[in-house]
Length: 328
Picture 1 (tube, rainbow, N blue to C red):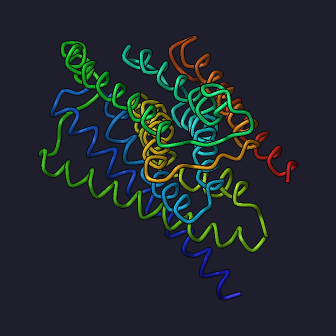
Picture 2: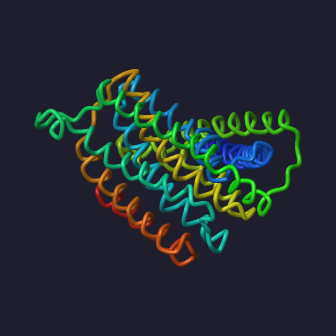
């Protein structure tokens, strides 16, 4: 009983650390972007997205090195599904409507869609090498992921340079510079460290809690680990949406999902090839693609996501969790 209370207490502590870390990160990133005249959407797609993807990276590397590949893949796919459905859904409720003010975002969506399909294609050697029954992310696949990731980063920074006038006007409408660059840098670093520590604590103790029920590593990856490593995205994007910075909220999710597949799986498979569970890839991977396409429709139809669409996204997450429990 004492051990159970201790685990629950540590989970609550991790949630507090995540929320405070998100607050520091958003404040520092938004204000530093104002100083450098960088668009909020680009801040979300780079600094915030990378910081909130660190828990997924750590979990994936440790899982693969410990021979728990199902936990690694389940974590990435489950996290991406949770980001699009649960996190964006909650953000839409907090902001009433997540508006997309920057045209830059429209051009980042293809990277999100391509990365989702690329995981499905590279995860099975049948599509490229014609080998049936071989499901593996090799070092060759990791190189492909990292090349596309490098192209994404290059495009983001090129977009920043080409849209200087638009960005200046955008910031006059949204932000007022407050802190010095070094203070904002400390806020960003401190926020990322807090997010990393909070996500790590949550996954560790939530995993111990789930392990008592005798669940599979794949199920834990798709649920407990995915939800735990999505908490930084929820905290960061939720805080941004609450403060009316919808571009950072959406940009964080898009950037995070791109980072999760291209950078996290790319870097992890370079360290050690990842054995793929064909059930997770063939079922949950396809669900990830479907919710990504639904998000694409919602985001581009009226340049934003309203509360009704937010409720629909949350409903999709509830249905997915119900499906996972039924599949046990």
